[in-house]
Amino acid sequence: MKKFFLLAAVVGVALTSCVKNEGLATVADQNEITFEVAKFKASSRAEVAFPTDIPFGTYAYYENSLTPGSHSPYIQNAEIIYKVADGNGYWAANGETYFWPTQGHLDFISYAPYNEDANSPAVPKISDADVQQTIKYETFKVDAANPVDLLYSDKAMQQTANTVHYGFTGVPTLFHHALAKLNIMVKAFRLDNRNESPEAVTSWNVVVKKITIKNIYDEGSLTLKTTNVHDQGATTVQWTNTITAVKYDVWSNTSSQTSKVWECEQTLTTTARHYGAGTADVAENYFVLPQAMSAGVQQITIDYAITTSAPGGQTATVEHSATKYFVDFPAVPAWEQGKNITYTIDIDPAGDEIHFAPAVVDWENVDGVISI
Image (cartoon, rainbow, N blue to C red; front, top):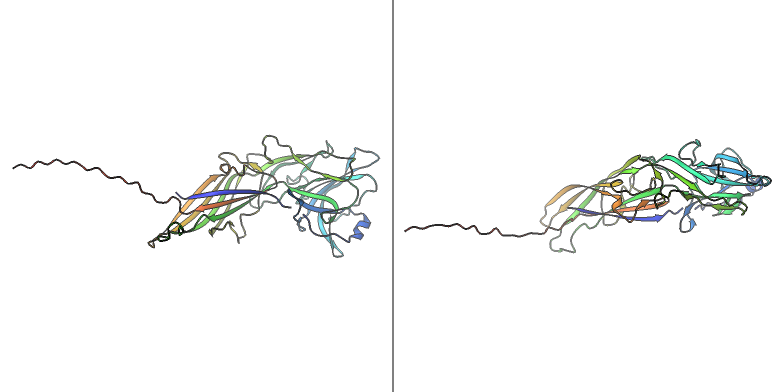
């Protein structure tokens, strides 16, 4: 029986902006609301640039210092894009120009990518009942054929002017990933037995033909809460997942499930490479709904072929298909929000060495009579 091993690793998602925004005297003088944008990295806050070709959406709520406690809409799902003026880049509203109020402050909540339909499941719903302390994604469905990076920002509170953070000037807009991300790598455990048997070398050629993940939950809801910190000056506050049914940072999923197939003939080496590397559909950075692994549910199937070249020159090719459940690999008990998860499929083409179980058939007693 051939063997393969599935190894898993999880890393915190690295996500900053490094586009400079110095010298925007004209914008600053006009008091236009601009944004400083970054993505969150668990270990060091912000380190990977937010892509300048992806617009994001924002909401802002105004509190007048003369009537504290009353937050009224100031910006409603505005599209924020990257602009360049006089050789300098900055983020600001597309088509509209919003200016800072002369008194009071603004609270900002942003999301990405931008969707002009505010009722879309990809746009978080903001609760006014508790002064914007709750946002929800409701029955959002991941497109298995074209999943996108769903993001929400920290809540930027008591903002009164553009300030400098992460190399940008504007509203601090630090995004977090709402989904999880999968990567699948493949390798051969060995391709010959030269070290074990230098005088009788067997070699193997291993080709992975298809990888399928199935029974993956693809629709769910997420409720995030924060605590407002008014009267503490300009600051940002993070959101907390309200799901307490499981201990992992996942979504509340529906029963909707999907599958994803990657298919190409990839000859393995003993060095791990992303499956489908060099093709348009590589098993890398594949966004999935955050979910806990369950017995008998999420599974992976690997279709592969092994050609064996024996010491005597004979060759034989055998097709294989192996299915495993993700829950059987406890290193990753859940696909959690903001986690970049890598599975390495390690195929051992040798399988079981040929052993022998000797026995001897007992002598059969035959009686003969010789008459004289």
